[in-house]
Amino acid sequence: MIKLKKLKFAYPGDRLVFNDLDFEYGNKHKIGIVGPNGSGKTTLFYLIMGLLKPQAGEIEIFDKVREREKDFEDVRKRIGLLFQNPDYQLFCPTVSEDIAFGPLNLGKTREEAREIVGKTSRLLGLEKYLDRASYKLSWGEKRLVSLATIVAMNPEILLLDEPTAGLDERSTARVIDYLKQNDHSFIIASHDMNFLRTLTDEIYLIDGGKIIF
Image (cartoon, rainbow, N blue to C red):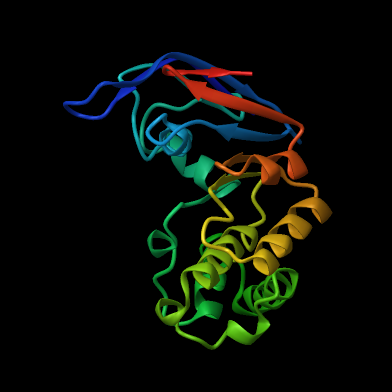
């Protein structure tokens, strides 16, 4: 589903983050990615989503090479990215509107979107937050709502960037239960090895600009 070949990427004026990076990801895989701060975990997700462009190499997703901005429009409908910072993800007046935003943009009717909001909020225990303003929530609450906005779009792959950062034990357990009970394909970037061992089949290390099994 995802093939990265000989990718090179550096931020302007900075060292190479990736140097001839190769990575393949298949359907229904559940993998974790670890690495120190600055190793490129978030950058990897941004490259897959077309939010950053490599200086060299090839990105193939769903059997199609993706190069231009237009190539990634389809990718963003089929892959859901959970940003590390929830404030990048939430921008509507209320939680329910934030969750409905994705389905509506995928062509769902308002009635269908309302049903999706109800189902998604029940899955993640967010029913009591639906009428609240997203910007007034705690960091942990925002993280759960951000996950809900992705889940509501029913993507084929989830890219989860530190999904439990700032969550208490109860909320973390809720995320784990959801991911265990739903047959998603996902890649999780996290510093929490226990969390990754609970959910993933394989764990990769990003080190020295490459991904190591």
